[in-house]
Length: 113
Image (tube, rainbow, N blue to C red; front, side, top):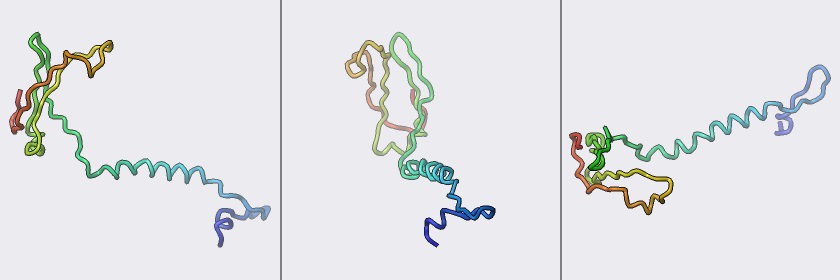
């Protein structure tokens, strides 16, 4: 049976061939399955970690708490630093001098302020 014959079926009443009418449904199913491809391609990548427990502002600057237990997997290669600032839509973020960056901290298991 060829592809053309498989795509058409005979109408028992008239004997005429009817074309396959469900091709849009099959196309949508293929697209829906294809949407999962990026998910499966990224399965080996590390997931984002939310380790910031609190943040606050004061006249002296910013206060941030980091839960080091969530970052212990990264402690051999990396340190933690915090950037703090108030952005203004009138100033370019890369030219803004009001953004403060802390010195790097060693990652330890207990929470560090």
